[in-house]
Length: 506
Image (tube, rainbow, N blue to C red; front, side, top):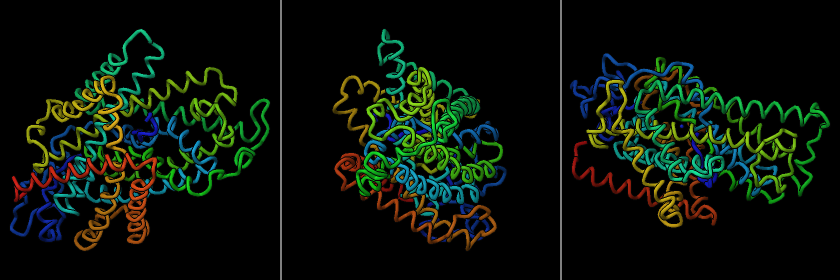
């Protein structure tokens, strides 16, 4: 749902109360995150925390309002964003038909990270998901860092998608100022999230349904055309090799294109984040983890294969968007307007998910004092309204800067989260490696969903994510994103150091 910056012109919180245990002593065999040998629990876990009595789901007072159908569609639609519909064209233009391989490699990393997250989430459903696991596995610094990095990523997505959505609507309604449209979109989806978690789920359910329907129709039409069953068409995949070869730019761009492609998959993890507000958290996460393989292979690799088979990769029509180009080549009338509607749906879905994700992760941060306690307050509907409103602040500020200072302040904001999702994924992978050893020792029965090929695939994932991040630092096209994102990371680590000095026991 979320989009990588390239795509637009650029997817719950328990404070587990275990950071002291993670840093100083192993948890008792009963349950990681539960009471210590003396019966006390560091940081005093609330009734919503894992291991606390009376609330096995660990929803910390949040209203359980997401049904299985919501969770299924959130999981299925999580990776279908404007990054797929628009940003994939950038990868194709830089890589050629071999972009199929770039998306396959990036999707493979996303699948591995989701499997690692799924293992932890099924074993220990928790509000805040990976925030809680990083805190348990890496210590308080890990939880603080991953939580605020993830929050920063999503509030930027909120801002960028508000601007992108306004740009799309402005093409239909040129008489209305862009900033007015952006403001209206922000207010609308803020209201949706403030009302109840069920309203978020319903909106995301229908957004995801429309996105899945759109990509499914495209896959069917594209396949019918490629195999020669479309009127006037004949079976032909010559475009895969007919314009300079399968990899016209060489193997280098195939590998470097993995960097932006990885960002397109951000959002797959939202199902794990939302699990604590669902009626069946373990089942929801297990389903999302199992289905991510199909989603990656079908929605991304499958559709990219059809695009480069239908349209020459270096065609001028690719500038209008790869899916528009393919539909126009097939002969679908008003393809550009159809895709504009679909992209708008993807943008609104990203806005909706961004507000939800940012508010839930900051709510989780409050459980251990990593964010102001005042943000813990819930509405009568079980919604963390203050956390939601905080998530909108940077969005509103960024929308203003998009028009007042697009080339300086807003440009920095765009670049400053380019590698943030990669930092989050790396910390998720490191958390799984440590937490898996601990679970095998203390609670092996909880490991009902396991990471494949542990520990080898786990360490391979850590290494691969590290390579992608280092590549960003050295490649000219991504160096600015890395530098700005690294500055964001340094600021968050500095904030953690200040927090530790003020509260050394937390």
